[in-house]
Amino acid sequence: MKKYFPILTIILLILPAFPGCKKINTDSDYVAETGVSLDQPESIILIVGSEKTLHATVTPSNATYKAVIWSSSNEDAATVNEDGKVTAKATGDATITATTDNKGLTADCHVKVISAEPVSVAVVKTDARFSDGVLVLAEGESFQLEAEARTSQGSNTFELPSVWTLTEGDDYFTVTTDGKITAKSLSGATEATGKVKVELTGYPAISDILTVKVLQKPTSMNGFTFTGAYTPNPDGEVILKKGKSTALIASFKPETAIQTLDVTTSNSDILTASVNGKFVTLTGIDSSEKPVTVTIKSPYNASLSKSFKVYVFDYDKNDVKPGDYVYCNGSTFLSKDCGLRQVGSSNIYVDASGKRTNKPTSTGTVSSYTYIGVIASTMLPEDNDFMGCGWLAQCKNKSNAPELYGKPRNFRKSKLCGLSNAPSTHALVIKGDQEAAGKWQKNALEVASEDGQVGGIYVSQLNGILAFSNEQKERLNSGPAGLNYSYCNSGFIAYLLQWYYNLKTTASDTKVLPVSLISAYTDVPTVWDDKGTTGWFLPGELEWSLIIWNLPLVKASLQEHGYPLSGDYWTPCEAEYGETEAFYYTVGKSSLTRTSGYKTTRSYPTRAVLYL
Image (cartoon, rainbow, N blue to C red):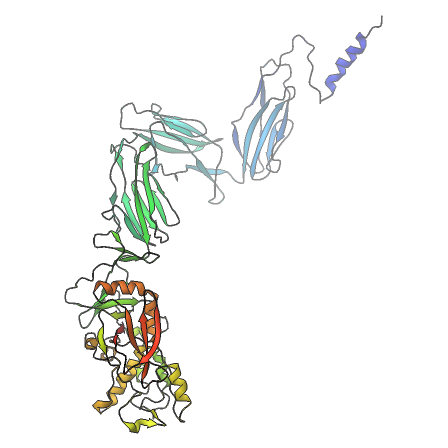
């Protein structure tokens, strides 16, 4: 029988020499390792270039194999040798691991490598639970504390390994070494306080102290108190202007309970909310016809919740806008809110009580002032000569009209008076009522004397200044030599030229008016009286183009005064055959149509406008 025992003995003796093989216990006295630990906290701080030796302890103490293998997760930041000596290489983080050579059990130490010695540490207090530097918690609430440290190099902050301990208030709080604090029950008390200490690992002299407070949970909710300019209307809705804010106070009972608020808006693109203790600030970001729902509740009692709606619109009552009513006392103007808040598929107004409605408010009265009309447009061109007065510079031949040459050139937008309640606002105002239908008036080209004709065309001392239509301009330019007319589409310029013409005309039968029998010419101050407005005149193409932008709004406001804008209205613009034909506008539901008609046979009312 062959003997194999010597061969087996040799195999068992040489197997431990192979590191990839587990050690095989053949000794009845073998004790297996059950754990491994390090002599340092879970996290330590090292400065670049410094060293620190970690020591591993294998348990139980009588374990047969106690050797460990050291490794680093990031050797760019820190390396470790076979004896556990850690060398800090560069700023960063590394995990140093000790692994038992026999069973592969591990222990870790996180290493934070910084460039310079830390000099301070402070609790981070940015969360809404902090009030005046004190952390306020409700009974049973937990919170993860954080701290930031600074080094001797610069003002940058770092999150460094720290240890948290409770120094006061252990009857009402618990805190873990990594900073998780929990408030206990008050057991009938209304509040309790405590103190927590944070200390940088390895730097016991660098620490900070935080005061903590625990309060009762709320049991009921108080009503809101609005402190801003925009408050709820009788329907409980807040109507806010885009770009503006309003504030309110929200609170809970009992008054000693924690007052933390949770505030949300249903559309943060339209309305945002910010919270500071009991104070809530709502800010309109963009306008919308649809409301935004604001919900305020307690995060500690789900049953305590209240909501209300906020509308964010383009206008408020203080804005000067199309549709507003205009008043005059003979020397100054002011406007009154028509209630318009939002222009859209359905124009939104606000009535006297603050409720939303679909029609303008009443014109009403203003003491010592007379209602004169409605703002048709505030979209006046930015050009300094926005009414086209620069056309008067076409009068280049002083001999043609010496009394007119150069005189109107200084009439500019800056001289308009605007509104006394908004002096920087200039507007086109359309008269509140209309003049009855009457025969169309002659214009400056139609003087009574036949001696004023050249080649069958009337010629006055306004030669070289004005024709009332493009067609007229073309016809006159192709006529007798020396005629040089310039077309102007502003009714005001036509009126201004005629006014100057009347000043220099001596015969009463050659004086002209752009509108028949407008008694209100004297109702307002005029530019030639140096009062800063144009006075009433008949709108031309320029004025109608401004009115049409806001036609439904203008019509609605005029309707409130009993004189709706509808039907046909003459303009001062001559048609192709200027002696007998002129343009008139037909006002539709939301549009204007220009047509020509015979002045001597058509009887249309007139609607005056003015710039201020």
